Image (cartoon, rainbow, N blue to C red; front, side, top):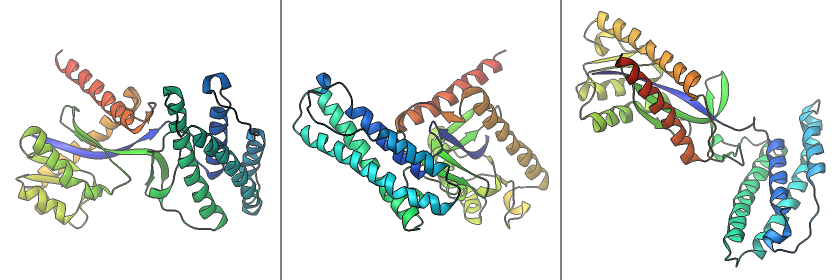
Length: 306
């Protein structure tokens, strides 16, 4: 059995995040919740609607001609957001002893939005006002899909979603997939993917082909110690052909075999929607990824029966 392994990114269904748009999201979402009909909530409280002012300030920040002007507008937007979050905190306090299902759901929804809003305000103040570099793992890039990771692909582009790692067989049948947390380097995934192959199929593959990002002497030793006869890294990274494969012919054949996973990933994205997940929540994200893969595998199996 031979397999090929590669990673790709599935993006979440969110808009391009920026500090100003995230603050605007917090204001409009909380206001929308608080302006629900009073006869449904049974609550009596008053508050000011700051959404027009927040939207004007957000647009002024986006259209500012220079960083100095943009920075001077952020304190006003932060102040508006803080006021609206304060209103939400007041309602949460009113609902702290609620037992009716609708009120409990309203309280928990507000708690979630308020918690995320505080994180957005904190990261905005740190990044914009104080010039601090906020680590990617601490950032919130969406109030609606807070599980979203920031995936920076070398010096090319920044994507917002989750990185997945795929194993694909000779027939383009996807034999395994994992949805990863954060943005781990490819080189750290080899042992896990080979272990999973052993757990699922009862043995390690005889031949493995991977991109150069997976290459390391440690990974090669691990694969060889588990009776993988030939290991092909598309870029050698200081390794020799003799160390990886039994011959130069086998190495070249596996390198051509590895290139086929690029077409498999492209096919999954173009035809089965794997480029962008349109389902909400992290659990649904994983379900969406596997739904795309299972659909592709069923079509591959159906074609093989002709």
